[in-house]
Image 1: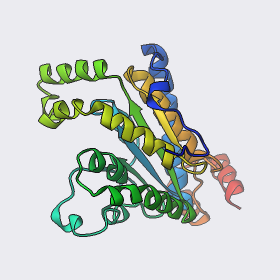
Image 2: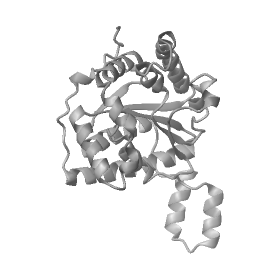
Image 3: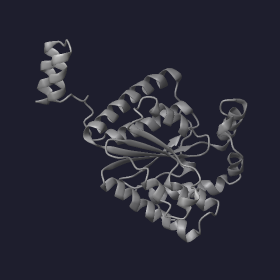
Image 4: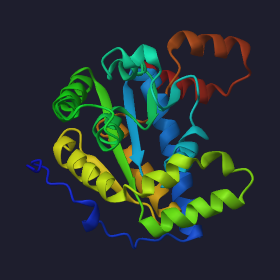
Length: 277
């Protein structure tokens, strides 16, 4: 297998030891969430758009990280797409169609909880697609992501990696917690029997689709707090690089109306006018 020029690490090379204390976690989470809100405002104002791809092992913490994003973003321009088995309509069409239909419009951010990478992961390991077709997926995905970037869509790709023992402990936690039992399925246990096959598929996926412009970020996720902060940091950096994140200033018409209707400090209105004129 030929490695990509970015030479991403294999799963076996990932340091799984990082931990993060509760106090530092909450302080960094607050700062990153504040930054996310500013990014969303900047996108709404400038028409920017972005896609965040969440891949990873079952129970690796994708959902918890997505919830920390959703908690602070306006749902009118932030959409989460949970990707499951496609219905017949999509099975009869090119596999990328259902993802194209869910791409964000100008001013919006979309998060994919699993994604088009199912083509070279579950469809490969479970023999749902002929080998020649899923192998074509590497080329199709690189072209698809190149198209997104050329269209002005920012792209952040995250893979949450945990070890088998941690996954098993989290399965038990889900079974014991009445509010989390719905997350546990028969497939979760069955997939553990194919851990090595999935590991091989993940390594090849990352090696063949991690590029300079669309790199994979592998998140050591044995510690949930560390994983959330590292993932959110990659998201914030990827979505804000080169973007002006200053608070939006109302245009002249809005300021005129506010000046007539509201009892505002004249200095405030004057300072805002100076920033738009």
